[in-house]
Length: 303
Image (cartoon, rainbow, N blue to C red; front, side, top):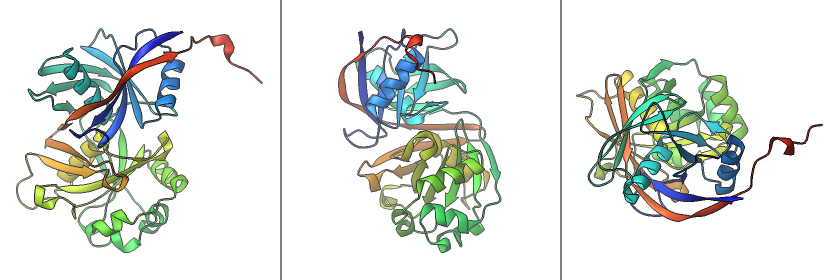
């Protein structure tokens, strides 16, 4: 058996035990896919990033939730590069990352904040019965009524697709009692990984928070994700696509999330046409080693 250095890194926060925790294995070379899945299951955070050598970029990453591999994960990307910067493995500046959805550009600031450029957005309105969404999310159907007149339900993706649903007030967002099987079915019916519900009635409006969001991804084994980079990027592109702001589109937005899970975090979002970036801080909260048993194909039991 071999041991691998394994980290827990809190992303979209500068405080440990807040934001969104990601597992990071800085040197995953030699691990089989089944071992990566086992490590992700053992860490039991929403996603774990496994960093590998790459012929196409500075490094390659594979992301695993506790139940399956995921094409893209924003907070684990921020976490991984924040940890590499803290270790002195990378410097401030531009970097590239090979993912399942292509090679992405990463920028690390002098303070260690990490910005990732996501894929070009894909946005389109969907035909949704608000009553079905209300039943799945455990929310009053009236929460969608007024805001939905200007901002429709939509499929939005910058690498990982989400069903985007705006609601009018924070009390409706905070009071949701989702039925996870129904949420998974709702997302799946629109070919989305999860559902992202948001309101402009943010907790930190006085601190320039643009909106408050909650992300539910039960189909990937994550009932509620604390602070979600991929969903934030998709929502930023959604706001641009549907002209959510009467005046000039903000150069930078701040999306808050995780407060109802006692893990508050803040995602910076920039949208410039087809270029979508999300960014934030990261802090290592646990640094250790994990012993991994050898993987052998013949250990699989067949019926």
